[in-house]
Length: 284
Image (tube, rainbow, N blue to C red; front, side, top):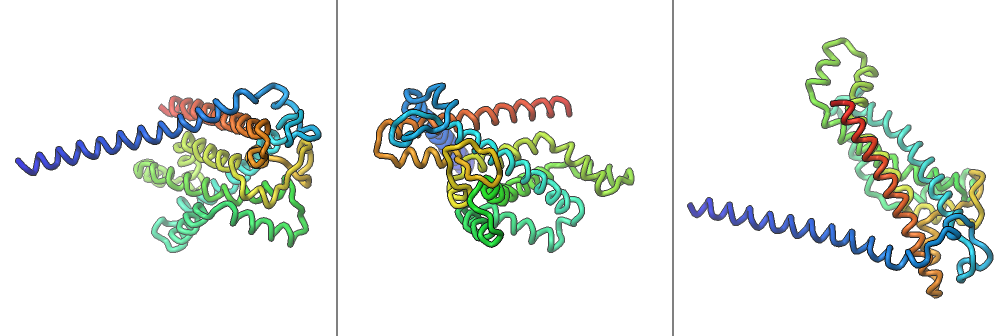
C-alpha cells in the first residue's frame, strides 16, 4: 500500500514539474514576443521596410532596412537550399547504402553530432580562413558558404532521426519486391516527406538568425545585394549595430528590425506546418 502511495506521490510531483516547465517556457516566449512588440511597434513603418539606409540612418536619420531583409532572405534561402541538396544524399547514404551497425555509419553520425554543436563563430573563422586562401573577400558568397557548412549537420541529423521512424515492415517490403537501394531510398524519402519540411525549417531558422558566422564572412553594406561577390547586410547584424547605438531612436529601430525578423520566421513556420499537414493528409 505504501509503495502505491509513493508511486502516486512521484507521479504528482512529476506532473507538477512538467506543468511548471511548460508554463515557464511558454511564459518566456510570450515575454520575449511582448518586449519586441512593445518596443518595436512604435518604430515600425512602411518606409523602414521598403527603403535602404540613407545617410545617417544609424544616428537616427531617415532610411530603412530593406537591404538587410533581402540580404537575410538571399543568404538563408541559398544556404538552406544547398544544405538540403547536400544533406539529403548524405542521410540516404548513411541509412540505406551503409549498415547502421557499420563503423563508418556510426563514426559519421558521431561526427555530424559534433559538427551540430560547434558554435557558429568557429564556422565563421574556418570559412574566413578558407576565403583568404581562395582570395574571396567578405561577401554574400562567403556568408552562403559559411551558413551552408553550419546547416548541413542540422539537415543530416534531423533526417537521420526521421529515417529511424520508418517501420521495419516497409523496409522489408521494398527488399522483398526486389527494389534497388535507390528505389528503396525514394520510398523512405516519400514516407518522411512531412518531416523533411521540419528539417528545412530548422536549417532556415538557424541560417537567418545567425550573427557570429556572417560577421566575419558576409561584411555589411547599405546597398541592396545584387552580386555574390558584394558585401551584404543581414537582419541580425542590423539589429546588433542598431542596438549598440546610444541613440534611443536607433535602439527602437533595432526592436522594429527584430519584429520584422520574427515575422519572417513566423511566416515560414506557418507555411511549413501547412505543407506538412497537406502531406500527412495525402499520405492517409
